[in-house]
Length: 289
Image (cartoon, rainbow, N blue to C red):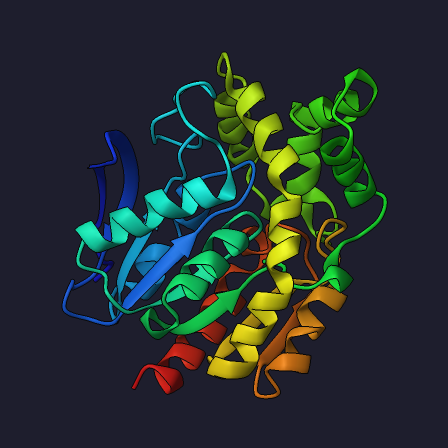
C-alpha cells in the first residue's frame, strides 16, 4: 500500500508555510529540505518511498513553492531567517529529534538547525548539499560571489540569467546521462514560481546572502567532528554547481561517512530515485534503530 501524502499549511511567525507530510507521527522523523530554485515538489516521489517506516515532513521555504512570498521589505530574506521559520514549523509539528535530507539551499538551513541544537539531529543525508569550499565549482560560484561582494548592474546581470528557464532547465539536465529520465514538469513548475512578480528580488537577496553560509563552514565542520553524526552523501557526481569533491570532503571530519557518487547532476533524485531511496532506507534503517 502506497502511503498517503498530505499537503498542509501552518502559520509560523504570521507567515503561511506549506509542507508535505506522510507517515505515522510516532515514527522517527525525517525532514526534507529543498534547494534553489525548486520546492518540496522535488520530494514528491521520495516522500511515499520513505513514509511506510518514517514520519516525513518536507516544507517549502518562504519565497518558494506554495509558502508565503512576502516582499523583501516585509521579510528579511536570509538563510538565517529561513532557518528560523523552518525551526518554528518543526517545533509546531512536534518534530523534536529528526534525521534530515539536505540539498542545495537546504544544506545551509540544515547546518544552522544542527548548530542551534545538535542534540536534535539524529542523522544527515546530503544530496549535493555542500559544507566545504572544495565543493564549489567554477565558474558558477565565481559569478555568485562577485555579485555578493559588489552588487551592481554588471554583476547582477549574470545572476538574473540564473533565474531564466534556460538556467532552470540546465540545472535539471546537466550531467544526466539519460535526459529522458527527467520530467520537463520540473523546470516548468519551478520557472512558473520564479516568474512571479517580485520573486526575482527575493532570489537576488538570497544570492547576496550566500557568503554567510561559507562563513559558517568552520563551525559546521567542528560540529561534524564533535557530534560524529551519521552521514550519508548521495551525490550527483557530474554536478557543475557542487562537485564531487564536496561529497568526498565529508569523510575528512566524519571518517564513518558513507559516500556514494552517482552518474547524475544537481537534481539526482530525478534520474536516480530508486538508487537514492535504497541507500537512504538502508542507512536510516541502521542508524535510527
